[in-house]
Image (tube, rainbow over all chains, first blue to last red):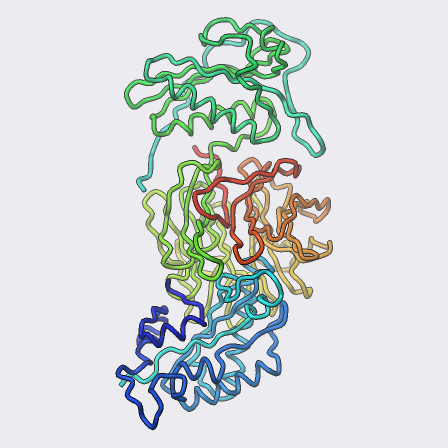
Length: 173
Length: 440
């Protein structure tokens, strides 16, 4: 599988076995996880306790924002999450990110691709407005191709209408 | 995975109509809306002219009967009801025996196999008047292409009785799917229209979407995430060679379709969150922007004469169908019913646009005239989408996805009266079908 669902990515990073597409042509996600994991001040590097880790970004900062039905306007909660992401990205400036836009399954394949592009772009523009260089961000839409929840009701749809900031690069030297 | 090349030579018309000139008008069934009574036909096992032809004589007849029966226009009379013993292609037909079982059309044939080559002859009769419908024909080809010969015979029978072009000797390219909804593996596949002879054209290492046949059926456009971003590729079916149609860094391109000439691709390009419609010269790579609005414009499809493009846009606030000139410019909205409209596809006959409609929590495949009038919904389900037209514009194939955690996609077909809905058998799940033109 080239594209793991984001929830699985956390586990994949911990195993240093991520196979995410290498979309920046350089470092992949696995290289963001320093090998060894020597405890430093009680914090295992790369674990969710390490504020510079992708795990911390994904779990504590929050890697995703959710959208209303058919909308690409950021919610107040979404903007707060993105504020956190922007702060983190500015602190951890060796990371780049791909923002993945997704839609729920209600809608045609083509329209949902375009809708996912709108959502990813909304998140990207917000991060740029908070000072994250646009050159560190790319967007991609998966439309309805990669739902994270698989039931066919609003409880799942609400989680599938998302823009996920997937980190790449990181501490490589 | 080897591409089987075969030539179907239309050798000759032979034999003349059987003398009698019945004057009650030819056997003819007109396909139109509303209820029709399927026309009963009989197709006895073909005469095996060589010893090796016995099995093929039976197999051919099964495929021919399935083709005709599957239209909903014809009804097969089972061989158990037959009175006449059909054994000799050249013996006179005992019409009273066929009339007695209410057959209205009769197809007789003979098949000879010599080594690797097959020769099939057939005649079509109007049982009621006791006359030939058209002249006898014969096809020759190779044994591994026998299904095509059966489809050719069935196309000929269908055409002679309905006056419409056939569609059985055609193929479908689609996305073959396995795995759960959140980790679905997709690869391109091609098959005969009836689900036989499936062959895979790509592996499933990257998501692939929405393949579209070229007007001559030799190439396929599709969208792949092979680079991590959606890009349009063109694939040669014979060689399985593919190449990307380049688009600028930071953009996404998808929803491609060929122009009727096969030289131009119309597609959607997303940049900065905005999706518009472009065309590209497939040889030079030169692109032209056709729409320039902040709304979503996607799912473009050419009229058969290449002069216009029907597409989907949410410029009104919800996705609706529009038609513009093939060079761009002002667009005219054609969908005005309740709900959301998408994936319009212009009929090869030019008269209708097929579409996906989403309304009140249900999805439908429907058709409307190109001015938006006479909208008719042909299907309803949890999720139907992505219509593609049979070469004669009489049948639509589409994707149906089932609801819930175990939801899966499969291919279905429906005729444009909406009466005949059928699942198309595929070895795995299937989506995004594209129907080829009739094969040459």
